Image 1 (cartoon, rainbow, N blue to C red):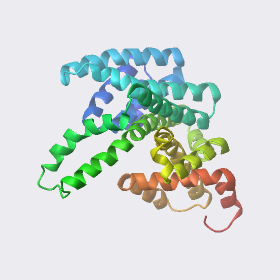
Image 2: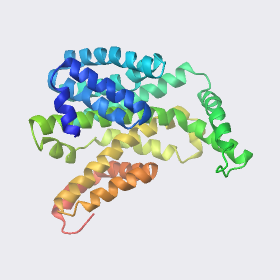
Image 3: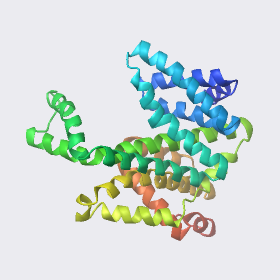
Image 4: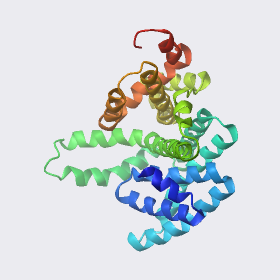
Amino acid sequence: MFTAIASYAMQGRWKASATTAVISVLAIIFPPLNYLASGVISLTTLRMGPKEGVSVILSTLVVFALLASFLVGQLWVAGLVLLTSWLPVFLATLTLGYSRSLAMALLTASGIGMVVVLLLHLLIPDVTSWWQGMIEPFMANLSLQPSWQLNAAETQALTARLATMMTGLVAAGVCLNACLGLIIGRLWQSRLFNPGAFGQEFKQLTLGKPAAVITAVLMVMAITPLKSSLALLVDILPSMLVVFGLQGLAIVHAVVSIKQKNKFWLVAIYVLLVIMLPQMIMVLAALGVIDQWFNLRARSEKSGTNI
């Protein structure tokens, strides 16, 4: 079904725009669909070129704005989706198109996440207090629910904790959307026009030692007392974890293929990602960072035992 969506979108600018807009509207109800919308933009840009990609984004903006205004009465939603979803995936796709490097494209997506962090810290004097003010009404309503088990002090502590994390999480969300949209678009391009190409490209993904060193340093900082005084740098970490988590996932795919293991192992990894996303991202990201020095895929090819 998903390939049929891509095939339909490839039939012209307005079909691509209508597809992206409709999926984006449905994503208001079921947010993960937004990745598919970003995938259509990525596919269009990869296949038809940057100019057509821009045309599709602008056309989508018009269609989506009309639909959003009619259905939810909030015209500003179109601008928010443009800045957080369509534009980031377009920029990441441009990098892939010009560099022919999936690694560079994913690092561009993490760079966009960093820009989000910088802008929030520059535009909002006390970003943590701002987030706390945004979260408190939601938590107050949540605490009134019969199933809520935390007392007032615990609820306040949780609110304060979430406030310190929100900038990094929002940036990581923008980064993740760009990465998954790019990967979906590249996968669709491969299936429609060059079957099998993306699988090999993804399994060979390597982000490089400089990015790995930065990520490792940020990971150490995030668990030391320094994190409170270096909030901006710590807020960058989630975006780096996203891209190195994807490299870790690429390593798992490669090792399963090399060892000719049952596909159950991949299914298990994806199920764990759904039910334990933060923990699995950390594990996969650590795997991706370590791989820069230990080349786990090459070791797996040479060894007769599992990693």
